Image (cartoon, rainbow, N blue to C red):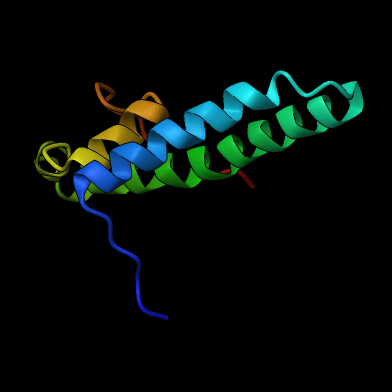
Length: 97
């Protein structure tokens, strides 16, 4: 599958639209649907936060200057900000067994 690439303007428009959709989801009249939507968004966040954290840990261990280079890209920096990683040096986690 060919990757989909957006320029910064298109990516910003996508982000704004997603923010509007999330805002609208809080106004869904049916409480059960509203709660289900909130739960999906919560777990979607968690599903991405952990692998992103691990990728950043690997980058910081092996290529400590790379994170600063990556942060210069608007879309990457936006992702880091969304997951609160933009100013974080991540401690190594012990492997869970």
